[in-house]
Image (cartoon, rainbow, N blue to C red):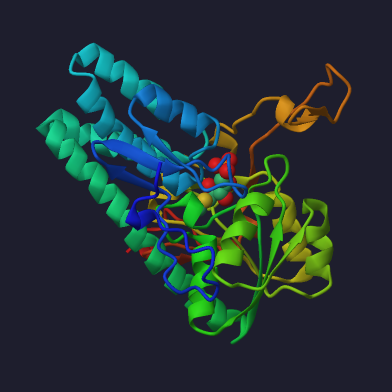
Length: 356
Ligand code: MRU
């Protein structure tokens, strides 16, 4: 399909000018989203007409990243309400959507928020609520990014080199990003020197997606393999690690892409702040700690093969965790659109003072 205007991807305009890509949106009574499985080779948009196709897009990571799947969940309930007038069918479709991926709290949050409005006020109100979730994501990402950039400049100095993991950029949200949103705010303030991106085995969100985004916005960057990240930190090349999150529990544990925990350990050893940038919708006060979170385990073939090429002997047993838990004491700061929480210094997301 031709990209609609709001989806223009300005690959040819390094320097950050007019980077107005939208990862996910509602158009002509359906969901439109960039197919992230095709990046960085092709920018293709999916037109999603059914809840079944939306679930498949979320499971295959065509739509991925906690805030983006939260928006997908919200829009998905609006879509379900339009396609399934029969109440039992509608309920089944919404339940299946909510369960499409287990770890990021945003999906259930987006579904529940729009479902409540649907139940109370009907189909058109559900769409209004879903569009509000979408608009809020844009605003929250901007606000938390600005707050994160300010905190970094005040804490580590006027010029900041960042290490990041996975993709917490525009592709993981509606259009701006969380961790890469902070990078973009630093860049806007002339306070960014460099970004090190780890490739993020096994699905390479760092290599395929983060590097692609950084190239478009003209940020100087270097790709490293995941296992080099600790050395990059030890060499003093980095002033802060900045990552996103899929869930932040009441005690300040952070669940994010597998590989985040080793990065936090290495950052602590190197004396580099470990910063998590995420919207409040990622904070899950109902879950006490990381030990209570369902960590998604994905298909063995993601690590035993690369496309058609086998990487391990046939039948090799795997434990393909998609996420890991970084304990609160290794998290220097969690920055949201409303606050900065300092877990390593004893701050907790469920502390009523930090919630004000
Ligand atoms: O499996 P993915 O690609 O959905 O994992 C994404 C991450 O772990 C991101 O870091 C997280 O969702 C934050 S995105 C702003």
